[in-house]
Length: 148
Image (cartoon, rainbow, N blue to C red; front, side, top):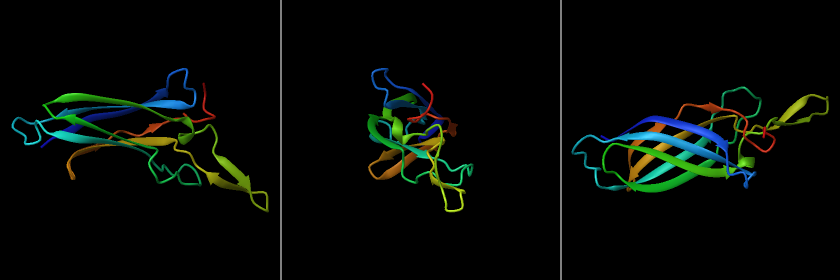
């Protein structure tokens, strides 16, 4: 059975000429036992970057994925995989969440950006999921009001 091990997510600056984007990088290892029937087959590599609700803000982060990246590769045995993509900075966390006030002067949350992100890695052979794993949660501010 194919396994995904050591999944890692990193988010950092993109190309200096593209200040409106951030680069996401997902690294993981594929372990393929000898004689596994997936060997020699092309699989779909789906990476889904999602916000995690750590219940540290009154508003929940959006439910839809921040980014979905599909690729393909042929499974030939154990391998290290690295996928890098630029995502719009505005889809990531900002330095401060948006608030408004109610009639009594209290604060009311308008939006919560994804301060906490995780990447799900899925390998599919046709419609069949052959391996999956999730990265540890990464926390930070990478959005439009973030530092840099």
